[in-house]
Image 1 (cartoon, one colour):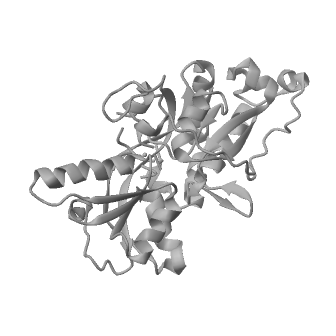
Image 2 (image 1 turned 90 degrees about the vertical axis):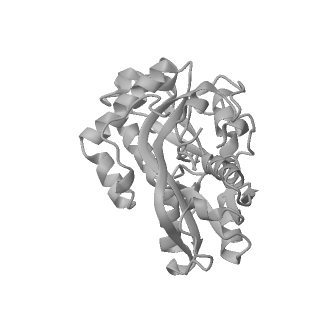
Image 3 (image 1 turned 135 degrees about the horizontal axis):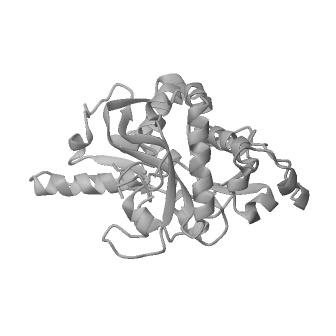
Length: 320
């Protein structure tokens, strides 16, 4: 989520989780991994010795042997990652499949709650988490909103950039033009995301400026937040920019929502990796840069209409 301390930046997937929710583990639902089949999955010792993928040798020995990178995600953020026909598809799975070709392994996705991804990663359930997670200093350091240490944090391999967007009912009945217009209004958001934090920050600014606070309704998943906006129970929802744009374009044939204003607080999305897995982090950075250089990355973003989030070069822990 988007930049701030998602997701899914601050105030698109910006789908990024409030750092305070890092310790909350979600119920995990095993799903398919789409067309991400770059490795056979037979984890024999012969795989490592015969693998000719260009960056295979950069991987840690245990992942070379397994032939699989286990990925935690929250597949509810079209076009970044979502479920279709029992498979997880979208920008992130396609990028992962391209990384798999460079590394010579399969990226196997499992969907669970967003606010449990980082804790599940650090517990060893996943090798990485890839779910439009905004790379922030707080997440890198394992801090909550108040700067309290909650866990070891994670390292990020940045691969995309997005900001926060506001979406409203089609026709914008309350004439919302920006997040500042939400003072005294009700807004819906997914719990544990950086854009929930953005609403909290804006609500504080509202009251400090002599206006009414924002009534923030936080939901377990983004679908519930969307439903609340669609029904008129909330005047607006907050989400990552590419997700909000895709929602406005597709929901009810484009007749349910519209995006208002410009995206704000753009920041990098990163693949989260355990801080002890420095070899894997380095291999992933090399793989992201390889698909940027050979043009595969651009083709994937064009396929999903996500070109606005393109980066020129990957970085490790580039978030602020």
